[in-house]
Amino acid sequence: MIKKLLPAIIQHDDTKKVLMLGYMNEEALTKTYNGPNVWFYSRSRKKLWEKGETSGNYLKVKKIKIDCDLDSILITALPQGPTCHTGNTSCFENNTEYKDSIFSKLDKDNQSEIIDQLIEIISSRKISNDENSYTSKLLNSGIKRISQKVVEEAGEVAIACVSNDKEEIINEFSDLFYHMLVLIEASPIDYEDVWKQLSLRMKN
Image 1 (cartoon, rainbow, N blue to C red):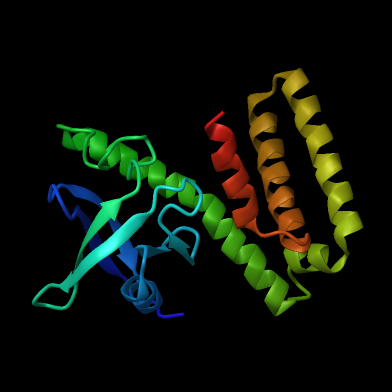
Image 2: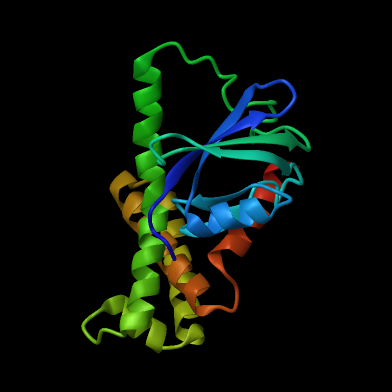
C-alpha cells in the first residue's frame, strides 16, 4: 500500500461548486482514473473506499487535474446525490465562522481516532503473536474464550452502572469496548462490516 497521501478537491462539473475534500494514495488515484467513480483512501480506516459505496451517492468522474507542484488533485465530477453525509449538496455548507468551533471539532476528531488506533494495535498483535502481550494471548485463546470475556465485561458494566460509580463505569466500559474489538478481530467479519451496518441504522 502506497502511504503518501494527496488532498483531492472534488468540484461539480456543471456548477463548479466545491463539493468535498478527500485524500488519495496512488491506488485510489489509479482507480479514479479508470473510472467511473471517485475513490479515496481513508486515513482513519486505513483502506480504500469508493465514494457512495454505502449511500449510493457516487461521484462520476469527468476530469482529473494535478496542480503545478504535484501535491494536490482537482477532480470535476457529477454527483449522483448529496455529496455530504449530512445530506447537503456540499461538505462546505456549514458556514463555521469561528476558529474556536473548528479547533473544538479537531479535538473531537482526535478522540474518535482512538478506536482506529486500538484496532491497529489489536491487528498487529494478531500478526506478531507476542507471548508477552495480553492481546496476543487472548487472541490465541480462541473465539469461545474471547466471547466469554465479552459477556463477563458486559456484566461488569451493568453492575458498575447500577452502583452509579462514575470512575468504575468508565473503566468497565473501556474494558468492554476493548474486548469487543478483540472479538471482532477473531471473528469471520471485518470491522468495516460493523461500521457499514451502523451507518445504515443511522438512516432509520
